[in-house]
Amino acid sequence: LAPMAAITGIDFSPILRNVGKHVQLTEEEASYFTSLLKPKQVKKGHFLVEAGEMATFLCYVLNGCLRSYHIAEKGNEQR
Image (cartoon, rainbow, N blue to C red; front, top):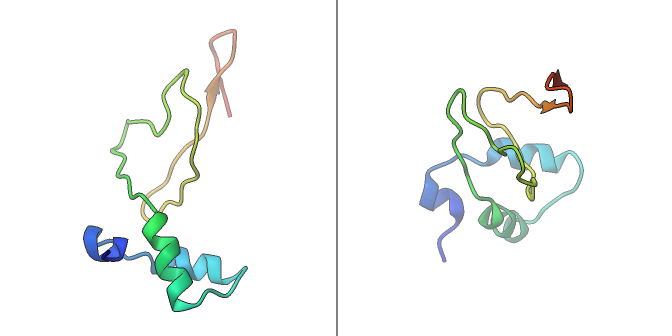
């Protein structure tokens, strides 16, 4: 199987550099790790997780920023 980076054209080196701060991966391990990643592009104003959904993943932002919040019972936004 082709590495995920070859399929998607995404540069995973920022993620691998971050992981490298905590653990050293061999080329084989890095290739396996990146093969598990599932790139997702989220457009401005859209959500990673909608109300009522449970987040079953972690995310790493390569470009841009995200904001995290929830709506309290009274209807106001909580950060």
